Length: 312
Image 1 (cartoon, rainbow, N blue to C red):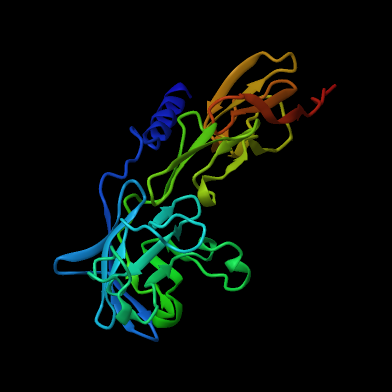
Image 2 (image 1 turned 30 degrees about the vertical axis):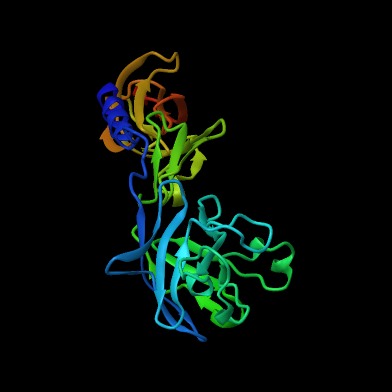
């Protein structure tokens, strides 16, 4: 039993990350967004591209053959109440802030005065309706980054219009995962952005990776114990069958009514033949829960002896 518990401890210990997952480099966006007004907008190409940095800020340039360079990061003077620079909110997986078509500025690099030839268009592209106070009540839109793909819409006023981002992809810096602690009393969830969130299971519950998301489940072991037959002649043996759930180790004992054990078997399930039964005998099954603790009796059965016939 001790060897089994040690082995299980080592298995679960290996499930715990040896070090915190780290987002070590920029995440490049690739592919195309689509606007019914200006057509395809490329997020990567020779000498240009848009990246999400480890600081969660979006930087770089996208390219449209109709409106030219669209800049992310390093922006100022945006409309609305939010921050100008585009940023990933890893709590919501939504993009926030703005991008800008640089063709509207006099030097076409998103700095300086507006180019009068732009006809009053300011070039700003909103990535989230929260950028402008109260605008979500009029047009509720967001750009989201989940599972390696962007989705949703950005808004580029009357020139660009709705920019659909579903064709833009990226490689997640971390693989979403769940790991149980060695004692199974807590778990650590790692999301696609390498954020680790520890959760402690409530008393009486343990982490179970066989459940979706490694959810905490009740740790109380249960079992069935069958003894056949339950009445026999003195000196005979009986068949023993048991099966447990939510248990890491079990012991089945054979004892007299006073509780003195004469023999025992180990295993979370099994089929055995008892020792000879010479008196009223009790079989007791005791198990530990999935954490390897809380060892307790969870099932029992009694075998009685047929009265002996005395011949005269």
